[in-house]
Amino acid sequence: MAVDYYKYCRWDRNAKDEELKKAYRNMVMKWHPDKNPKRKKEAAEAKFKQICEAYGVLSDPRKRAVYDQHRRKGAPVETKLGCRLEELYKGTHKKIKISREIIGDESGARRVVEEILTIPIKPGLKKGTKVTFPEKGNEDPNVIPADIVFIIEEKPHSMFTRERNDLIMVQKVSLAEALAGYTVHLTTLDGRNLTVPINSIIHPNYEEVVASEGMPILKDPSKRGNLRIKFNIEFPTGLTPEHKAGLKEILAS
Image 1 (tube, rainbow, N blue to C red):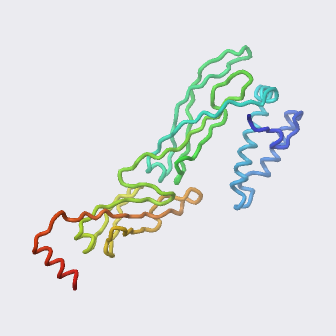
Image 2: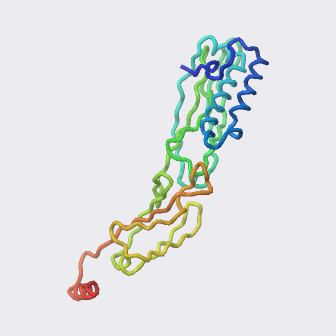
Image 3: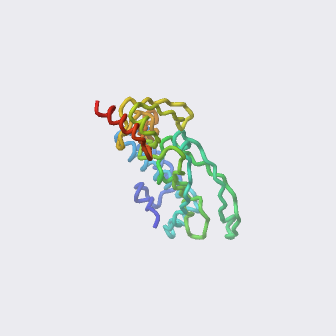
């Protein structure tokens, strides 16, 4: 079942077009995210989106007639959208071509149309996020077209994995490098060369944290999570008696 737009927006079911338009403008002014305190902005955005969706249906005579008669809407059509970690880091726009059936005239004749949907990928967007295009599904008699929903998926990366807003990488080092010092050289997701000197002894559970080199934070892209470098220490498979004696002398001192 679709949302009861009249009840949700507190609009009169018998309102004429001009009355509905006036009521819509009042609601938009009240719930526009820019006119609400920061602590209430998220709730205002959700309310604003629902009001716009409601007006999109009720301001169209044909859609309103269908809605008033049946108050039914097609089930959302969900599609996974794979994104590279670089795209989720820097942000981009993806264009997807869709085909949908629409009712072309009053006789109910149907035709297929193609449309390009532009999907905004904001910096810091997380997997599982849903991007909705209202009523872009097929049109059927007496049914409000379904929403098309794209679900963000994260493609595997050759170097980094993501954990919330942090980026994690695993670096191989020899035992000598782990004990005597090592410098990590890497290329960030936005193409910068980054050098990270390791000044501590690297033990099996050691983790080097580089502040603010992780993923952008969606609500404030000027801030970032951390880069966490973990290490895989490669131990030698064998040592000569001389090497063993030398190590004992060094480690005992």
